[in-house]
Image (cartoon, rainbow, N blue to C red; front, side):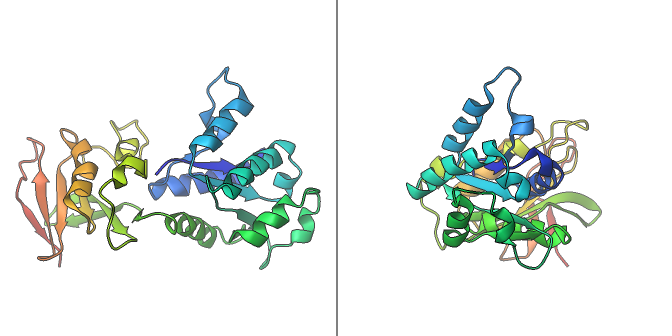
Amino acid sequence: MRPIFLSHSNKDNKIVLTIQKHLYKNFIQSWIDRSDIPPGANIWESISSSIRKGRYFMPIISKNYCSSRPCMEELSNAYHRYVKGELKIIPIILIDEKEPDFESFAIDKTNLIKSITENIKYVAFDVYDESSGLRNVVDAVWAHESIKFSQIEIMEINSIKFQLIKFQTNVSKLPSDFLMDWGFNIEDFISEGDNDKKLIKPLLPVAFNGAAPNWLISFLTIPFKNQRTVFLFNNRTGDYICVYSLDKDKMIGQSLKVK
């Protein structure tokens, strides 16, 4: 999937960076102007381009957001694309009580926030319950995707420790041209060394667990060649089978039985 555009006020940076980090842990890339606009680039052109290229626009709406002219311009731009069916909007409303107080957003003289929250299901993010809020944000994204991933788990079977990547399909059958528009690249998450902070760590083997057609399994596993030993879960026998092994590991064909 293509990166999600996180629209936010700089005054809400702390919670927005927390959301971005949690999305990444769940294999969801996001674009945030604070770190993704290169030096010397025109800020508004870069933002407009990212909104045009993206599939999702996630406004982190707060009093700060509504009082920011650039934020409201981004939202207006995205809403026009949403009306045309060119973009999905996933509104996140920052609240500090049980229900959003839309009266506090009265500074929005265009009633754009009201139009969006009346027509698009939003996520109410309680700033005093971050864990629930983060989980709801991730669920809101996966609700629109044909394939969803879980956070990596570190498992150990027969003294072999590996990184488990679970995924599941949300549709009965994936179209044969699915990869052409999916926009997901697992290489964006593969660390190349100890100092690389990407999600999938070096040295440890990886294992995939999820029902999918062979072409999707190939798409996900081929990037690991010469980088990681790879196991696939066998649903019929309930074990992980090594389908690719680094020379140093010498594990090809080895079976790890789940107890």
